[in-house]
Length: 234
Image 1 (cartoon, helix red, strand yellow):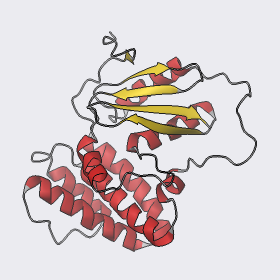
Image 2 (cartoon, one colour; image 1 turned 90 degrees about the vertical axis):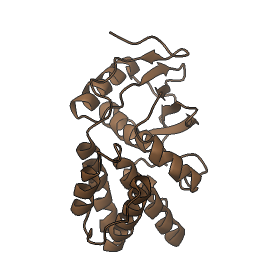
Image 3 (cartoon, rainbow, N blue to C red; image 1 turned 30 degrees about the vertical axis):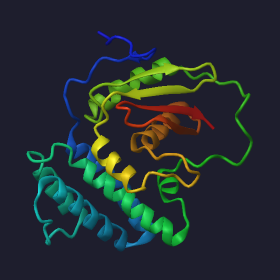
Image 4 (cartoon, one colour; image 1 turned 180 degrees about the vertical axis):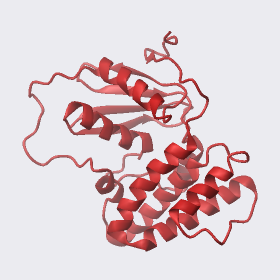
C-alpha cells in the first residue's frame, strides 16, 4: 500500500529493508571505475583507493590499511567494516568524485559526464516531437527493478510535471553521508555549475534504456533534509 503524499509527491511503497545491499552498490561503482581506468590508466584506481580508505578510516577512527592495492580488495575491506560504518559505499562514491575532480583539473574534461554517457545531443532537438512516455509506469517499474537488485532507497516518491519532466524525492538518501562530505569539499559541481547527484546520473541511464530518449537532471533541493531531483528529456 502506498505511503501518504509528501507535499504533492506520490510516495511509493517502502522497500522491505532499511539500507540497500552494500555489495551490490559497491560492485556497481567498481564497474564504472574500471571503465574510467581504461581511459586514465591504473593511476585512477590507485588514487581512488587511497581516497576511499582515508574516508572510511576517518569515519571509524582507525588508521587506513596499507595492503589494499586493488579494487576487489577495497570492496572486500569496505564490506568488512559494515558493523562500524553501515554505508561503506559512501566511501567509494566520495573517492570517485575526489579522483574525477583531480583528473578534470588536469585535463579539463567533464569526466563523469563522459563516463556516465549522458551527453546532450548536438543534433536535431527532440523538443516538439511526439512522445509517448508513461512516467507513472516508469516509476513503478523503477521501484520493482531497484528493489529486486537490492539497490533501492528505503523510501522515494515522485510527481509529474506538465512539461513531461518528473521530480523525484528522496526523504533520506543512503548516499547522504558521502554527498555531504563531497559537497563540503567542493566536489559536487558539474562543469556547467549544477550539482552532481550520483543517483541522478544513474537514473538518467535507466530512463534512457526504458524510453529510448536522452535524459538529464537538475538538483532542485539538496539535503533539506530531503533531496529533490528533476529529470527531463534533452
